[in-house]
Length: 87
Image: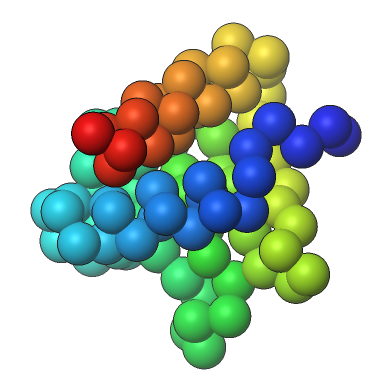
């Protein structure tokens, strides 16, 4: 899979959601994306629009999704949050 997002973008969006999102049982929720970690905090997860992103080892990520529409909706939300950070 071609990397559509840089590791810097993923980390900044994850951090933003953790700081500005609503605390929920699984993590923090902001604009349709939930951000959480595994038990030791080593692997980061972003979840929304039917997509689960795992980010961790060697700053790589993997997306699990059912359709290209799910993927494009998810990437649009992540990109939208990233734009908020820059403003």
